[in-house]
Image (tube, rainbow, N blue to C red; front, side, top):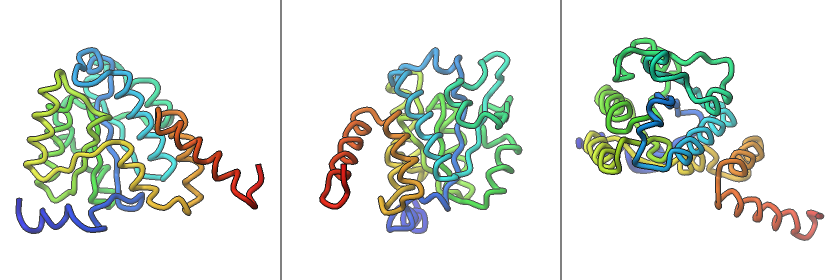
Length: 221
């Protein structure tokens, strides 16, 4: 990794914000879920839908894409429902970053922090992540909103991407960086709803924290 690449992974500027991020969600389709064995499929579905809903809360540009949807199936309903008016870009390229429509859509945002999640990790996530990183994008891959055909396949793909300068993180890491400060009330309420629906134990704990805050002196209950 070069000095410039290393420096881009440190300091405040290395963190994601709603203003510097663009999210691309790749191939969350029935065929890919059918052979997902690195994670519990329902958890990946929960996480990617939660990530998409958070992106909507923060107005982060989000692009949906599928591969050969007539054979692999349409984008899963829970994810499509977050952006009901967006028609996913349906590709023949296995590597999303070789489809000019996807690349052009990302370029139009003017943003260089590219957040990706995909099925499968070793193919549809690794290929675009490695290529985009080589083209000057700061690439972040959401590992628990992605998955591979085996735990080994997923893990080896994450290692390979890290060697190419890609940053792995989880969906709650992403949304926490987008929020950054609970005083940002405009997004805090929407994010609380996402956590309640998709945050599991963290969502329960967050609801409890809000209950305690509501009971502080002067706040009323």
